[in-house]
Amino acid sequence: MPNAYYRTKDEQQVNEKSESSESASHKNFIEVEIEKDMATKTELIGKQVATRFPPEPNGYLHIGHAKSICLNFGLAKTYGGTCNLRFDDTNPTKESEEYVNSIKTDVQWLGFQWDKLLYASDYFGQLYDWSVQLIREGHAFVCDLNAEQMREYRGTLTEPGKNSPYRDRSVEENLDLFTRMKQGEFPDGARTLRAKIDMSSPNLNLRDPVMVRIMHAHHHRTGDQWCIYPMYDWAHGQSDSIEGITHSICTLEFENHRPLYDWFCKTLKIHHPRQMEFARMNLSYTVMSKRKLLQLVTEKHVSGWDDPRMPTISGLRRRGYTPESLRLFCEKIGVARFSSLIDVIVLENSIREHLNPIAPRYMAVLDPIKIVLTNYPQGKEELLEAVNNPEDPNGGSRQIPFSRELFIERDDFMETPPSKFFRLKPGGEVRLRYGYIIKCNEVVKDSDGNITHLNCTYDEQTKSGSPTAIDRKVKGTIHWVNARQASHVEVRLYDRLFLSETPEDAPEGKTFLDNINPDSVRTVTAMVEHELAKQEPGARVQFERNGYFCVDVKDSHPGAPIFNRIVTLKDTWAKIANKA
Ligand code: ATP
Ligand code: MG
Image 1 (cartoon, rainbow, N blue to C red):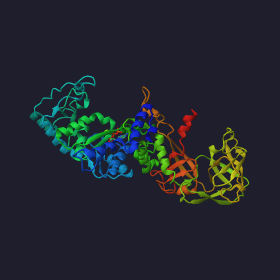
Image 2: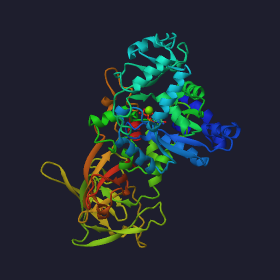
Image 3: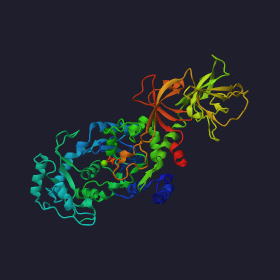
Image 4: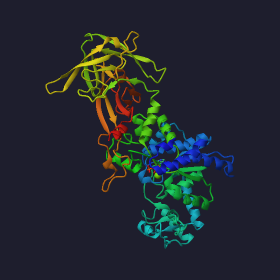
């Protein structure tokens, strides 16, 4: 099923192949490997599957992280194992408590509970001891090359590197210098601790990689205790090992770090988790790197990490996405072995799919134009029966007021329509939802030629649901609200934040910021059924014929809800593309 969503032909074929063999057993390739490992590897027999989700607390989580969360926590659930939430907090200048807290909130909101809450920074002491062990065994050395020199010595993909002139320092000298690095004797960047592996390895990650660097920076958890910090590669696998992780699942860009992951565990002779890679999820019409999302926030292109246009979990939550819809989305796209661009329509369809059977329907007019039913008695008002949700047999119904003056949607009327326009036009007929068939007799305008209202007549014989109604078919049915009881509410019509499918592919001299959609939000005052004005923050409803909306949790006030458009009912962009 997921193969339909992949973009390029090549990717599609590859995915079809892997998909068809997987769907036969309903298992993804990671599950297949885990089952094999647990059944055949002596050190794993009788053990539980142990996974972890390891975010760096340097930003808010995005929809790509949701994929990783669903995968890691999902595996633990499938196999009755455990999944830890571990903060990979080894980069103090970019990390903060605010990010830690937002990540915890997001994981739980998605519906997952970690077994243990852990921090790589809790292992700094152990990592220090292991560094000393590697120095003693001749597997690590203190290097005085600066960053630029190190790059020169490193070589390239086609040329081998050169040994550092400091590579053959004695164990004693290394121990002395490393201790003094820890004691804060040297400035940032003056020295590093490097693994002694192989400067001619075809894998650049094995060319004596830096393990520890000097950084006089305050850490949000360890304070000023440390002025040396482990590099990602040195901290990550060792943290996995300490926690007894059996399968360390990460994204594809770490595939060529795996030999280093393995080298550290083997050389230290510690528990050795198996690293497995899957494809990072990319979504069309958005950016997903935390660095770019941070830039959108700090440069105020959006109102914050939880701006409803952001692909962050907090943004999607505020927009009105449900945890169920995000989990459904992650399930639909499957676990790919090769990079793919997922069409954002798949995400939008997931929330439609979840809300269709459960969201109550209401009528709301976003851009009102008034109609007057000239043959409807002045002062009369009747109540019409409206179904709350035709998809929900237990959804019940409500009564809505109907009288002489109503509002309909401006674009449900056209003065000079094309031939296939089946809504309201001069001399034409249309059915009002739950009500009557009406006919437009006169377009009334002010002196500037703007329409002030439409004079219409209603056909009393055509009341919806009435046993005595004349069954007269008209092609269009439109929504409306009763002028007298309508409430005014603010509605924020969100659209995609970027105009381009792949915003990062900006032309020469431009950046992803140049691809921002200038119309990604439009605010209107809508006329809505009175019931809508009473909705609580977080409530999700369908505006009939319009879309799904959610009451904004931040900006709404009691009695004055603000509605965020989660998604239109149909994919309007497809229509635009088809017309072009
Ligand atoms: P970014 O590049 O967006 O900053 P990251 O990989 O640096 O993301 P981490 O905090 O290190 O962010 O990610 C935590 C986990 O989430 C990692 O295991 C990472 O592989 C996974 N992850 C991050 N982005 C995606 C994505 N787009 N699709 C799937 N998994 C992802
Ligand atoms: Mg990262």
